[in-house]
Amino acid sequence: MNLHEAPAFVAVKVATLSDGCATATVKADQLTAQIADLRDRFNGRVIRTGDHPEKLRIDIQQRLEEQKALQRQRPIEADILGRCRAWLAGLPRGAVLEQIIPDTETGLSLSDVRVRIKKLQNQVEALKGVPIPASDIRVKVGLRTWPDAADPWRHWCGRKAHGAVAIGYARTNGFSSAGCAG
Image (cartoon, rainbow, N blue to C red; front, top):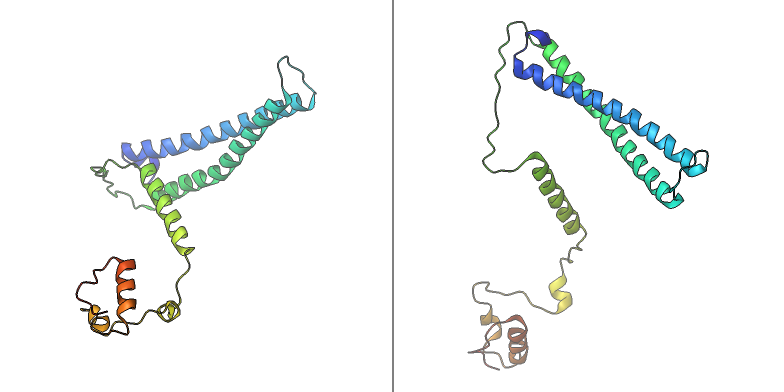
């Protein structure tokens, strides 16, 4: 399918992508010229009243960061545009395209979702940094395993030898020691 045969909504999307690529190219050229001008002023080849070397250095760094970001983004946008055009060219003649408008009842935009994903990735990384306790941690700490998980006090209560341990354990872990012999 050629672009001129495609429905209007497809042509608009492809034109938007194409305009974005062209705008990025113009922006890259402008940034290159701005960086050259700032470097000339910083190095003293061009002198303007009110130029401060520190401000010029900061401006150069900002423009260089913008240029790096743009250099990373431009190939991605050009690749997307090329893939869209190739996909359209690969469609058979007479293929019917239907526009689907996504349901956005949640009110989340793509950028909101990306921010949430980034936060979750940071949380996962933080959790990966937490050390995992050894399998024999109970032995190292001096705790015994409960013989009856449903009634842990059954192991401790009624034994005078372990009464003080049971009461100490109950106090530090928020359990009531009522009914324990000790």
